[in-house]
Length: 294
Ligand SMILES: C[S@@+](CC[C@H](N)C(=O)[O-])C[C@H]1O[C@@H](n2cnc3c(N)ncnc32)[C@H](O)[C@@H]1O
Image 1 (cartoon, rainbow, N blue to C red):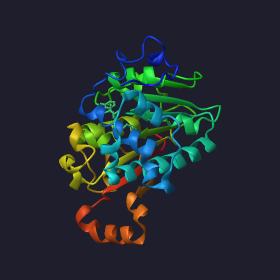
Image 2: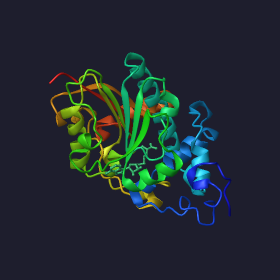
Image 3: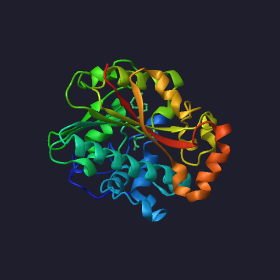
Image 4: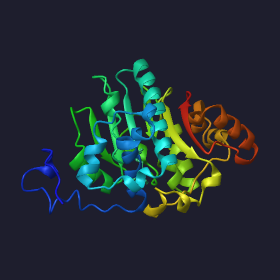
């Protein structure tokens, strides 16, 4: 099998298959989950045309990696969740950068997502941060561009990631916009909360931290997911109540929360309302946390 040369480092003549190192990449369980949102953004609009996100890169990246997307697209729930969250996060980020055009955005556990393709306004900056093995892939597939988007290695499970990424201190004038999507549910609860707490302790006032969360009922249930199950990753953290995040640090404020049930119309809303006493939190939701002054 061969791939087209795209002119990028890994595809330059002589580096093309059969010994293209990009295509030989094998990721561990949790980093391997990055293919799920990538496939959804590349092809998911075939299933949900109204959620088309116009990701100009995703198909090409999947081609380079030689991924067969068909099994991933069978998980229609995951595809819907990804396309819905991408749309909501884009809208939140656009509103943020309208208010703070020269601010910095950060994608924590970015995988092969590429939000800057939509959010670049000519003045803002963007940091895509992930584990070293994922950054190595990004270096080949999505190298830094125009000095305003960089890739950065980080292990979010280790305290100190804020300083590792050299993010501005809490007394900086301009707030930050941070995304942590498809990441926290794979971490032990204490680590997920520590990441939110580190944001709250360091971020300049007015910053926004967007995370997605599953219900606590999903914890330990990854084997039932058509897309996550085969990767060997497990769901380890979920919400019992959306408000519980605010208890992680006194500076945290709930800016907004949304449930994917909105994609299912009034029946989804009604079913969620009926089940809330047992579920406590939506089955899948997006939460935007901001921080007040210290
Ligand atoms: C499901 S993927 C989501 C990727 C991306 N956010 C998206 O929506 O396309 C999970 C990502 O979290 C990253 N991740 C998991 N644990 C991490 C850690 N401790 N530090 C940094 N990144 C981590 C993985 O490497 C992987 O890229």
